Image 1 (cartoon, rainbow, N blue to C red):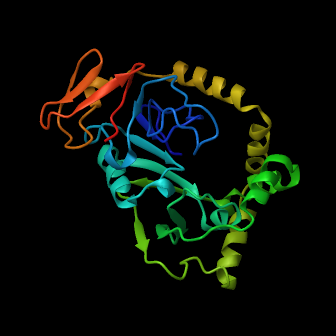
Image 2 (cartoon, one colour; image 1 turned 90 degrees about the horizontal axis):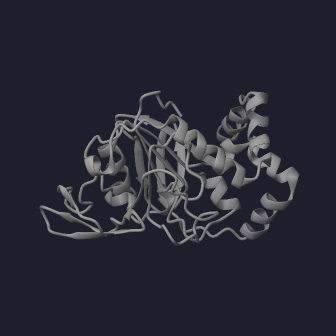
Length: 272
């Protein structure tokens, strides 16, 4: 990710393992761990909100990270427009169609591909027959795990954008990723071949470190690098109408539409 030293960074769907560089965290599910791998991390400013209705002012951030969120939402057009509204640059990561077909997540609404530099999204009507098998292999078989990590380009879509997110909603039917085409296969293989050997092994080393240690290290790193550029009262707005928020001890209220939102355990809860 091309995050600059002085960027103010938002992470959407930060979950149980947020990036060390994120300054503000945002997650729709604070207590519900069903769609992530652990309990929520709240080691820096955290807001509960839906990515399709972000409670942040226009251009509040320099950079927004949206990792493994786009495939979950009901309306990706809303989420994408909100990302471009709150920041001018960012990073999107999702499972690829190959990843969806191999692993299969029943709660993913969209299949995402990156074709010729454009994100393509298609309604997810697929259900992987062998998903549980490959989830188990990824957890227990060191050879499959190594293959997955060293060939992450096959299983992940990684897209960095500036000013505009280039995307297309593809109608149901034939996939835009033609895996019967020799040129498509050759391009995918070529991408794997271009990954330097050190970049292939570094994720394996990182993966071997227990998640608890990784999270503590990231938290310490985030605290060490954090620059208090903007506070939540400066950047929060009503997710419904984007109006000004009035802060009280336990509630937030929009001056424009009069909607109220609770503050629970110190976390502003701004889901609609």
